[in-house]
Image (tube, rainbow, N blue to C red; front, top):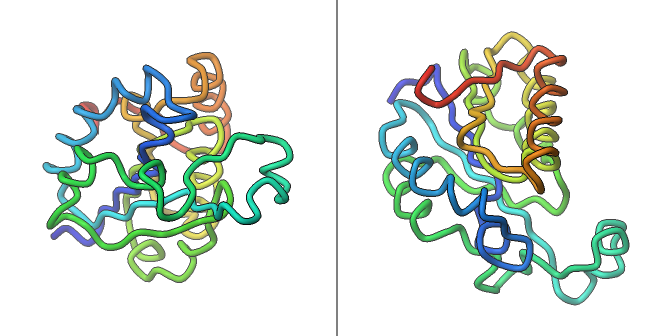
Length: 179
């Protein structure tokens, strides 16, 4: 395994693909992402948006987005089957996160030492951008690359806007076949 490369798969969960917050764009990226993961030469991490039914609507996110999603223990919380199958034998671990980004990356020596960090997943304009910025802060000298064809936003316009914002923050934006 190439220790210089990390792939971070953001929130490829059923609720964001074909569940309550799913989009056709998210559904479209699944097969190509699964193939990319299978062929990736490096360490792979996956994040999971994780909420709890008992208090989600009382959280700040629940008040601003009152749609229960990614509730721990539900089918919607699970990683999409095609993505999960691709992750088999490729994969470091899952990071459960209760909000858009996670500071857990700061505790991972692979992240701190990586030369190249590739990011794919959903939603480009919420969790992908949040985690890309955290990864840039944790390892500012790494080449951070968001794989634009392996990401989907809440809308195509929001996806495009988030890519521009990340590019302004010295995060590379590329197609998966360009890296």
